[in-house]
Each structure stands twice: as structure tokens, then as C-alpha cells.
Length: 477
Image (cartoon, rainbow, N blue to C red; front, side, top):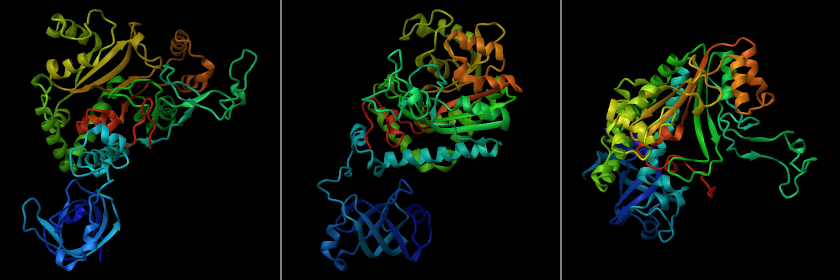
């Protein structure tokens, strides 16, 4: 007899004389109706037990959270809410679950409580839906790049360079922290360390990806990155996943084309393939919105927001033009913005980005040509000497979701920019070599995967879209 998943059984339109299914009990009502779920779908399958034909002691073990094995006949359901159900012939409890101790009982739990039980929270509808969508998005990322001729590369997780220049990195060492070797100046002697130098967990795979783009043409990384930034907010993690494509011979315009096409593809993929999960999360968001004051409610439902991306052309606007729009906007003039926009050169805040997307242009927005002094050293300096060929993509609800740039391909200009920021050339000698041996225009972007999952699922806290969040003072599980 074949073992079916719950999603397979629920898609069947015809009766089967005998099926086999395994899963976890969600509820057991009236000693007769078992709601069974195996994680393959949001929906449970109803298994109907003729309790007179089963041992009472066995049925007492059918509790919420217990793992069970059922065989029976798949028939058209007599009740409402499902097309088919299983008339149970045999029932085996594979793993008991003490109802007095099992934390995920069939009732509403706070997200904070579920984070404390992150090892069990995917037993709930919300988190099983989120994690299935996370998996589908991950597949769509690889599918897109594979279909567009990109090569997948694994950037190192341990690195000696700081790609962002921010210095907020986790140190990697094999030294005894209670007995650190010192050199003459009483500083730690890293020559005695495992790698013979100071090393850290990577904040980005971009620089290494650039090296591969300059030989393989089109590459992407999709891996874990780490920031030792003490930001205990709903938008920051110490460990997260980054998608970073890099393409040789591609300028900023091509980079914007690529990012727009990529985002539309992955979002359309889940709209086409994960409808049940999206509709569940859409309803959840609408129910949550009803509890909020009118001013705090979303203008669009979750699915409308996703279609807002796939169905609209992304408006492209220079930073200078965006500043003019914001400076002259009603919220700015009436001092409704928390951060008032006065001078050219300021960094845009989330409230400014959302105004441009949601109120002014009413479509996704790409801002390009940012001031050089608020962007990273590796971005290509424009002829005006004050802006760089950077671009950020802004989405409704969250603001910036993608940051990218055309990279600085001119050796002398790159050296000058590094010197101005006190970045030692000997740390990035290999990066400079790319500009010595066959340099060419090249571009890329970075997308924090968890930010994408937040947008697609409508979840408000980044801790709820990664299996085991790593945040300040928290490395549980």
C-alpha cells in the first residue's frame, strides 16, 4: 500500500479502497474525528474513527501533537469543509504527546510565545505556511538564475575582509580567549591564530562574487551572512541569508532590469504555486488589520500587494529628483515626517521611501545615483564627482528591499576611494587585481532573503520568517 501525503489525498476526486497516511494530530473531537496534518499542506484531513471498534486505551493516546499512522478508505466526506475523508480501519500511535505538557495546543498563541518554542512553532498554521513559502521562494531564486545562465557560487563564510566597511563583524578565532597571545604593543598576536591573521564571519559574499563574475560572466551567491550590529528591532537579525548576483559587462541600467525581472519572477512563482498558504496569510493580515486604528491599516491586502509588484512597471527616479519630490511634499511641509527632508545628501528613511511608493508614484520605485558619501567604497563614481551609480528598489510597506550598484572598475579611482576611507590596499589586493587584469564594467545587487519572505508572507517581525532567529542576547536552539 502506498503512503500518501495529506496534500495528495486532499487533491483526489475519487474514492480509494485503501490509503495509508502518517502525521500529527491537530485535534480529536467526540472520540470520533481526527484532524490530521503532516506539514505538506495548510489543510488537515479528517479521519473518522468508529470508536466502538477500537480499544479505549488506544484512543486516549490520540492527543494533540501525537504522531499517528492510519490506514483506511478514502471516501467522499459527509460533513462540510472537506471533499474527502478517511474511514479509519487501523490506527497506530507512533509517538505520544502528553496533553498536560505539549505547548502547541489548539488555541491562539502569541508570536513571542511561539518564538520561545521555535522548535515546535511550525506545527501551527501560520508558521507552516510561512516556512513553506520560504522554501518555495528559495527554489524560485535558484530556478530564475539557473534559467538565465547564472552559475551558483559559494562565497566563503570565514573572511579576512569587511565588504561593507562598517566593522560590525563577528570575530572567528581558535585562540584561548582567557590566555590571548600578545605582541610588543600589547595587542592580540593573530599570527598565532588558526589562519595566521584576524578573521571574521562574512557580512556579504559580494566581493568574492565579483571575482567569479569577472571570469564566469554571470554568477550569484545565496548564503548566510552575519552582522554584529546591536539592533534589537523587528527588521534586524545577526544571522540572515543574502542573494547576491554579479554580472560582467552589465551597467547600472542592466542591473535595474535584472533586479526588476528577478523580483517579479519569484513573487509570481509563489502566486502561481502557493495559493492556499498565501490566501491563509492574506486573511490573517486582514483580521489583524481590523484590530488596528484606521490610520495604521494596510492600504492593500497581502495578495494585492504581491500583484502590485508583478503587475506594475518599476518607476526609475534619480536621488536628486526624489529629494525634490520629498522636500516639496505635504508631509514634509507640514512636518508630518519624523525625519524632515531639507538638504540634498541626506540618507532616505523608510517613511520617505514608502511615501514615494505608496503615495506619490503608486508603483514600485527604483532610486539611482545616490550621493557618494552615503554609499559603499566599491560603487562606481559618476562624472559629477559627487554621486555613484547605486540603486535601491523600494516596495510598499517596507521601503528598501534591494540595494545594488555598478561597481567601480577603474583601478586608480578605486584606490583613491579606499584611501579616503582608510581601507588598506593589502587587505584587498586580490580585489584590486580585478582592475589590473582585464577590467570591465560590471554590476550586481544584494537582497536580504528574510526581507523578501517578510514582504511575501505579510509577517511584521523578521524573527518570524527564519527557522531559528539569531538576535542580541539570543542564540537559543
